[in-house]
Image 1 (cartoon, rainbow, N blue to C red):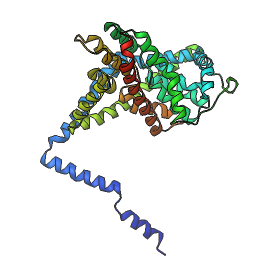
Image 2 (cartoon, rainbow, N blue to C red):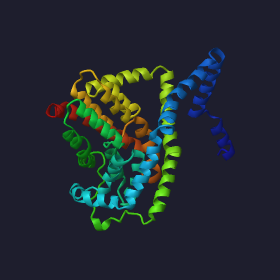
Image 3 (spheres, one colour):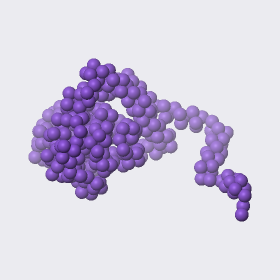
Image 4 (cartoon, one colour):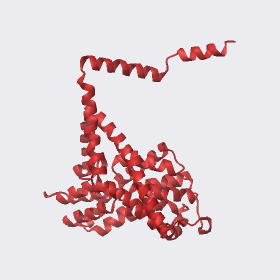
Length: 361
């Protein structure tokens, strides 16, 4: 029988996959430095050009960063005033019929009132406290993606609909409120079936008993931590990947393909891409500035996409990081649920734009 040290030595002497990839990267880097030394600096410049406008211009020096902190404060104050308990009472009868924990709709409501990151920070612990199953927590994330993550986005979107003579009420009902019930129902019967009927006596009360002044100051600190320690790093990571793809010459083809796909789905391409990749608020602002004659279906489709959890940096970056800290799910499970929610939202945009628009113009 071989000596244990000899076995370990033989094991260590073998090349594993990581070492092979690592030595390949070392060789490639040396060759690049030798034959094209400017390539690495160009790569870093491309990445910085992608990351800097988003992190600095949007999150640090614009109203967005402050809005995130304020949304956490508002959300925590609402929670302290009994808002969560009120929502549970409101949705309990409906969710009882569907045999789903009513807490699954809490993140969506906080999302509409504040910010998707604040929704996760506030509502994810509510789901855990309500003893929602992992399936129900996944349903909550997918449903949250259906709601506009900024009230400003919603208001500006209404202005765009009115500008093009589109009646907003049916669109609002179908795009924002109906998914709160329909999406949990569909997912509970298909992907995430581990749901259960809950009675009010089984649920704790969710209103914290901290003082109002402490609630305000603690939530301000939590909002700042959320912005600087979670959101900005997540955004930087996602746009670093985009920068690498752009440097490799791949990103422009992805954008072109996405534009054609959105056009096919009756979603205005330029604002749809803006919603998916950068900012839904900027997207609806661009909608209001369109002066050329355009098919109303494209306006409706773009509005529905904008009133969601997009952009992708939020769905695959900020949401997983936020929820993984305060829920029972890991980042992989959260990303899958988020992406499923985004696919549902795109399908919803197509259905409403294509079939409902003729009845609202």
